Length: 593
Image 1 (tube, rainbow, N blue to C red):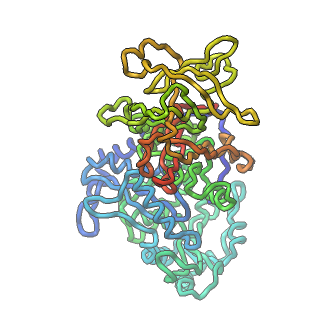
Image 2: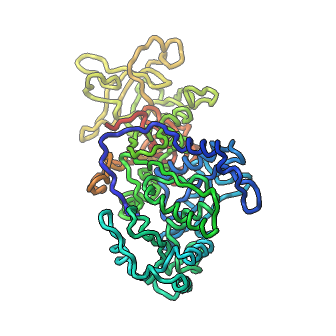
Image 3: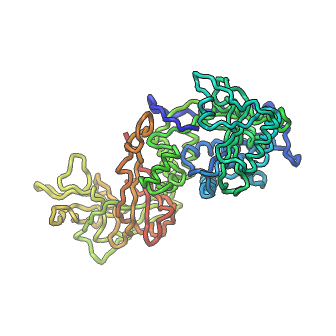
């Protein structure tokens, strides 16, 4: 199908959770619509069978996550139905020139990462459209024999021109009245490799004057001399999606075929093909039914495979798994959890009306998930040295903090306070602005500010050092020995500032990748915009930071809350114990306006 431009929405809105699909399924279950079906071995079939049918021509994105959670989620939620429920994984691999095993593997990995599988009663239900090529061909011959399909020898341009448009009816092909015998012979010659690409196509004989252009004798087979990643060179003719999809559904006994709204106009063709094959004795009732829901339109993102590929090929991002990409491999590397994606999909619900979901809804789902599960840690992202002048250089003061403030049973982090510490450079100002409660030096006869070093002592700023250019390179302070957190005497000190820190002796140097939204425009490809003009040039920053010692053994993909900064994840590709790399997942609060 041609790519549609996204509309410019009048406003952002979050969809209310809708259950129209559940209402349909509930009604079918109440009527026992699918309760008497048997498989080929005579075993009762589940009353609810859905499917997830990706084309293996690219990496899945956040829009696919909605479909995955919907289809597999329905199968999970209707496990109580008669004979249970299942969701099939089926690859729509009918276009050999664009599909690769790499994409098949990435799709399988993404769906499993989200927490789903396609095993029902010990049987794995992973299928490919190419599994059915022999049957699809057989069914095409039956339609030809029933005078419901014909071989058209017009060029692609002629077929397109004669198809008409919304204001002009189509024109019958001059080959439309070929006899079934002639069509069958030609179709078999197409299969045998006698003709080059484009010489002939197989079309369904429906109605060239139908108001729905989809039903104007659609093409269902074309010649393509291309190597297929599964069937090799066995075939040189390949079926198109609209023919393959509905038949695959019927062969797999799908009960509810759930698609996005762009396939709404194709539903009559879906029904026509299955009814035609029922008439020639291939299928019987109840036939699968197609239902459409609104696709995910997410602000500050694009989901066009063509445009995502352009970003990768032009090296505007660091690959398909760049943490700024809306691909599932990118989202995973960014630090999103499967639980947060499922929570997001639950919150936006399922609707038949197109709408926009603001990126903040996705980000908040991650915060809500990580708040309860992510261990805390001190990390200084923009280090500035703090020297405690009256602290013994040979002494290290043991300090500790809970790994999580609401989970004491998780244990505590242990670290030491020393004479030299790293603090955030933003925690010091030579001339403080109003409301600045962190470190600033003495001035105008007034003492410097006092702050508490978290889980440590109260300190008072006494001065600072600069380099030749005037840049502050160190801050000086004195500490109060009777002010340590957790001691009775600490109550005698009342300060407004509370700083995190990392000991210079113990700090672990790390690379921190601070990611932001890839686009500055909430709708980068709406209307006639060039989405490349909206790329956020500050969407990736690399910082050299210092970690507290408890993070030295953090495994790849473990997530933490870096206190005061946000949620971070150990990069699943580049992170090692000897060279830690952490990515910003999401900030502690939404800072986008």
